[in-house]
Image (tube, rainbow, N blue to C red):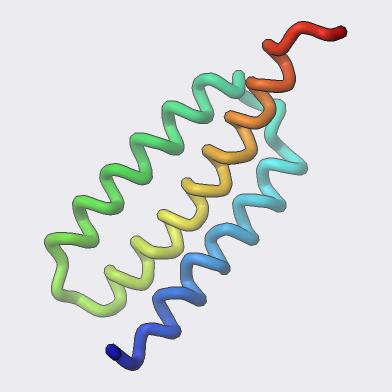
Length: 88
């Protein structure tokens, strides 16, 4: 088993916590569909950068942004489902 990966997992959690606060307080500034597209594109770009970097600090930053994008996507997709689902 590998060791020393805790900072990367912590970075994902920190990014996710920041995203939860921002989407809760400012989530209505853009349409949820645009936020989902932006978050998914951000996730993909950061994952590509993460795969090509050999710099520890860049890896930490990418993991934080990936955590941010994951929560942003989850929150906005859930919002879209609730908005588009028929009542009844």
